[in-house]
Length: 397
Image (cartoon, rainbow, N blue to C red):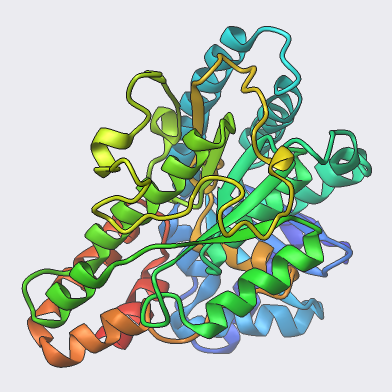
């Protein structure tokens, strides 16, 4: 497709007149066309100009797609990317500071790759798909450069699109990840999520293991209506993964968090050798704890085989762990992670949350308010578009 901004503006104005819309100025900052996918991205100065191109009910942009004969048209406002670029620059500054502390460690390689990708993302905040493809095509054998017997990173993988996209990106960047899935049972981690986990790790050639955890107290309490389960559940799952990382001396852990952006998206957890999270998790002398985290040490219920895979020396800063919220660091939106995960066969199922929260909503309708607040939090952060938020809220109510 070959069309300049001037001709595109004239075509949009004509379409607006043809369908009876008000004749207004059409302002376009930039146009980006992906010839491979035949997707046209139109950048406008601000949201009002974006609305002009979309039109009421999407009629204008729909007609425009037909006229141009492209697969899809996305319209974005530059003003929406200003905050994202600012946040990514904060993350970049934090990441570069941490890199200086690591010296010439082998682990610098994936972190340097992440820094390179982040800079490219700051330069082109509009289309992460093209940024990722360009990076991967310029580093076709990146994943094979590192010793596959030594895990550099654990990726917390739930089977949802956020964590799946994180694993895909981590693999591309050369983090040599071990995917870890906390399994509280079918009511929180149903079969379709486990199928996503197993299919994706197989396609990527990434080793994977489950960590069983007992969330009976959270499940019972939420079903009785005493509290909303999501916050408690997320906290325990994150702590379970982090305990596993510390026990196996793996230097980095990646989560699929979209909200902890900017400088908060990457954090160096300082290690105290005398207290490796055991106080926080209540671990007793038998290796079990109050949260039900059992057999997390390599060799106990380990489907990876020999313990050599896990117990390696953390040479970043011995014993410290780098925690990265990868989608937040890259300022990704829900649409971005859906696309990345979808390209690898991971699809988001309909409905809000897990089977547990669906049952809580049925038994205690007042709990829906707290779920809606979680959706609105993501919307305020720019992770969810208003239309996506409306869809989720409709599913909740």
